[in-house]
Image (cartoon, rainbow, N blue to C red; front, side):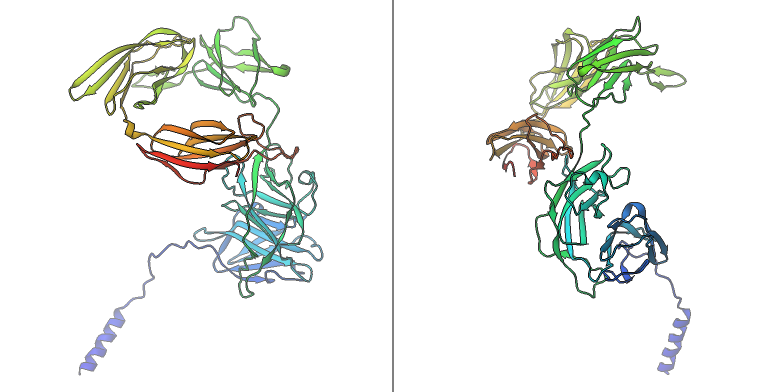
Length: 554
């Protein structure tokens, strides 16, 4: 009886059960996987006009013209067709006899549903009896930042002639991946001229001055490679042994032609006139009569003119600017309309004169005011300094001076007690700009820091070659310049009173001793000046001396 009852209940529950499709689950994050290749990858005696590659899921192509590379290049580009889970490559050209070909898919294949990208896939074949088994690999970095570069073409030439990048297509071609690395596989044995190219016009030639290029001084030799076992569909080849990675530093050649760049009008009656290169001499002349008076300032980099007009520019103005070597430009200045702010039913004019500040609360640096417009000389600037303590507030009136005509900044030095709230107040209309604007009331409130809020970095630099100048640059975590020094002998540099945080040291090998980093020049076979960073992480803590050492010229 019990058995009959159990059987009846089992039938009842089975009849009530429903098949439900599972909901949720982990998101697919894996790229497509190759299941089959026809003809087989790495085939010899290849004579087909089509290649069919089948994946484990539906796929789509992403920018095939930019992400698929046939190497050696073909005169007529192949055609690509996606059918479900298969990619069909149609060859529209006559292949050379006894030649190994590679098709590199770099971020070109992704799955249909989630868009997961297959970073790199290589299909190789040979029209001869064997497939080449040599390789070259490496990485491409930005010469100015040492950061890896993605999407840069890398070209191999089987001859070592300087004019090849200008005039001939490469023997082999590939593209860097996200980490800047590249691989040439299944190439023939030999020495190759290697070039990395940021090809703006997509013609595989270095024919634009704005294109980035990298090169090696000597040809590079292809190395033998090891192939994975035959049952591996991916057949990812690896170098026979681990070696130091080949690095190409990509640079944009300096444009030595002086030219006027696009002018800018950032605020009322201020005109910025930038040039591509620094200038040594400059002279301006108006091409009309009764033009308004202006004050001229040259940027610290000596490549930009700042013109500050005393009266609003109400009409079109023409000027001729002459630089050294009799370089002339005619410029046109248009009237500037100050931005308007909408109030309640009316518009109010914005005061273009702004005052900002820096180093507030830093007991080792003076409070600094920065002016958006040059101000007139002032021998008596009243500044109220209010010190707030538990016992009460202490108010002090001090007088400072603006000693220069048309100053753009001013220091307010005073001794601060540690860990004390301060308020610095300057009443309105104390500062007057060259064109008649005045400041609004300035209130700057802050808490002063203490000595324990700052740390020191003592860096010992070892210089093996005292004929070389090394520019050592200390930057904060945001890349802002903290301190720059030239080192040409072994010594210790003390970086004092640093705010806690992470820092990095950048080194430039200043070969021509001009005090700055210089780019390369392919025409002159000159590499960009070498740049590198201190490898260890530099973390400065408050009230602590950090001692490090660095060997330069490594």
